[in-house]
Every structure is written in C-alpha cells, then in structure tokens.
Length: 338
Length: 191
Figure 1: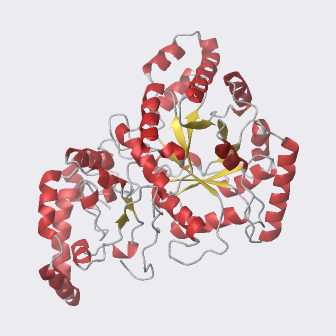
Figure 2 (figure 1 turned 90 degrees about the vertical axis):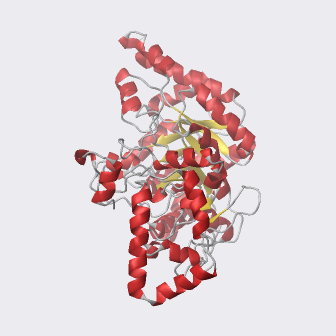
Figure 3 (figure 1 turned 60 degrees about the vertical axis):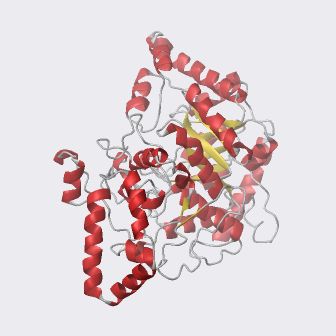
C-alpha cells in the first residue's frame, strides 16, 4: 500500500479491505462524507469514530451532486487519520481524461481501493444548472480501471507505467426495476473488473435474498465481494425523506409500520434495533461478504450497531500500527507529489 | 438535445420538459418488427458501395444522413450519436437516457419504472429490458458496450455500419475468459 511499492517493481502490499475480503470473514465498511468547507480536521473527526471498527471507509465524491471536498483529498486525509479509504469516483463531473488522471493520482499516492460509479444526476444537487458530463458510464469506468491496472493501458491504448494496483469496487441496487435483471447487471460489472460491490440500503430482506440467490446462481460471489448497504433510520422524518426524496431506496411496509408503531421517543431506538437485526440476518445469507454502514450523519452510533450485531470490532485491529503505516504512506506520498 | 418535435411526440407537458438533457423515449415500433427489419439493413456489397459513394459526395451524404435522422428520430428519439447500439438494446435508444448509459439501467429507476431524472417518463433501459425479454434477447444486454467516440455525433450510423466501423463497439465477457481490452484496436483513428 505504500506509494513507492509499485515504483520499485515490488508487489504492492495489499490493503486491509483486500485482505479482509480474501480471508472470507464478514467485512465492515462505512462512509465518510467530506465537508463543505476548508476544515482540515473534519475528516479526521469522522475517521476517529470509525477507526478499528471498519475495514475501510468510503470517501464520497460530491455525494448527491452537492459540492464538497474532493474524494481524492478526503481519502488522503482519512489515510493519515488511520482509516483505510475507498475513494469514490463518479462519471458525472469528469470526462475520460480527468477520470483516468484521478485514478493514476490515487494509485500514486497509495490509495488502495477505488469505488467506481456513474453518479447522481446534477438535477438533484446544489448546482442543477451544471453540465452533466457522463462521457463514459460506470461499467465502462470499471473496465477502464481494470485495463489500466491489469493490461497497463489507458483507454487510448497508451501505456501506464508503472501500472496502478488498487482494488476495484462498484455499486448495485437490487431494489430498482428491472429487479430480475439486477444480478446480471452486477455480473456485467464483475466481468468488466469489479472485485467488490456495495449495494443500496437493504431494508427489504426478501428482495435482497432473491437477488443473492441470482448472484450465487451466476457465480458472481466467488469473484466479487458483495457488501450489503445498511443504516439506522432514526426518525420518522428520515424515513419520509429516504422513502420519497432519494431515488432508488425501497422501504418495505412492514418496516414503516414498525417505526410508526412505537412512541415518538422510541423511534431512534427502534431504528437502531432494525439495523442491528438486518446485519445479523445478512451474516447468515450465503455469498454476502459484509456490511456497508451508511449512518446518515450518526457515525458515532456505528460502533454500538456493530457491537450489538456481533460484527465488531475488527479482528486484526491494531490502531497504532495502522496509523503508523498510513502516516508513512501518506508522508511518502506527499514527498513524491512535492 | 431533444428537439421540440421529439418532446411533442413523447407527450411531456411543457412545464415538465427538461430540454437541458436527454429524455427517455419508448420506441413507437415493436421490437419484433425492428428485429425483422434489421435484416434489410445488414451490410452487403451494394450497401458498402453506397456508403463509400456517400462519403465521397457531401451533398448526397447530408441528404442521406438527414433522412436517417428523421426516420430514427421519429421512431427512437435518435440523437445521432453515429454509433448505433439499437440491435443490442431491444431497439430502445440508450442515448435518450439522461445519463446516456450504454450498459444498462442506473440504480435510480423508481418502483413504478420511471426515470429518476424525468419522473414523467419510463426508464429507457427498463423499456429495453422488457422489449429484449419479450423477444428472447435479454443476453444482448450482457454485452459490454465500449465508450463511444464523440467525434461521430451527427454522422450517419448506417454508413458507419456498412463500412464496418461499428465492429468492436461491444464485446462479450463472461468473467471467466480473459477480459477483452476496453479500447478499440486503433483508438487514434475515428471509429
């Protein structure tokens, strides 16, 4: 994972997420949303809440098309704060030149994981008047990254030397029509080069189990770690928001009834309990590699959720070592950039 | 960019038109008919000669391209990307997707099958899936579609097709054999 490894012609030390997926144990990832502002401590504060509890944390790329600190800068800050980053990169704001450039930058500075997606349309963001780029799509971006890494070539066919070495991830939404096609769509991304995939929030386990059954039939789970998205819905307002305002999230009626059925003061607890139960169910579904916790700004509650679900803290946690290793990687990276 | 006629045809109310980005179009001709009609367009020596002649005669080429735009615009909402994926997408045009996805639906399709960006029209990839499924062509949707060549906008995709330039636009990958390269063999040259 150190920045110089590839340059020295050595096999790069693999990241923690890659090791965790290879070990076959239940992995845990979470999300760090970068700040809207130039606060160098904002990422470290969120990383402090997650360190030791997650194998890696996604650093989002201007999530929901709202301007934030870049996922690249955020990933470097997360790394120096001792949390392994998954750098998200979307096709919304960059053409193929900028995408490949950012991918090379990530590899050069030692970011071990990338998550490649098409991205939300600017229509939903804080700049609905922006030009939507979408020069290539998410599947093509995965394919491009894989070609850069394994064949050492850019989209143009020109050489990338030394080749990058990140772990390549993608996303899938098992709950969005056409539901019977979603596993095959993931298979397509895996064929293009995805090695892990995080899903949209799993609230409806029936649909998710059918999706996983398709995934197993296609054999995708043997080459791609499917990490299921989860999160605590802690208020009826949040429930209303995710059910109506966020495209692609499906909340089953049974869960709505359960959250509405408790006194207002107990909704938060009930939401936490539902999240815990979902994670426990996920650990029993064959082919599920782990859980991706998206906590809607309630990052401080993540350790409790994981503890209660019986999946934390991380077995190979060694905060001091991780931190030291990452500090070295980061300073080495900075040195090279300078 | 959707033309006014195209917007009229899909019946979007004026206040709900989003002219700044593509709008999904459900084709007005059945997939079965179009799979059959496709045989009429398959390359043969006559078409190849016609295509070569058109490329030497700019005026004729302009007229031919305008006719293609008119026909495909009326049926598919064609935007003339010049590298037609229709035979592999159940004859629903992926370039009418607001994100111009060439490889299948995004994760924002509503439970009722509507486009997340234009909620008053159906997702074009859902339409593509249903049309392909009805004709037993769902496997087409597993083809990996390569990035498009943006230099081809406005050119005739029929001429490109007859001239053999569409070869390599997509490829099959089952995840077990070696992954085909993402770039075309000679990326320095247009299609």
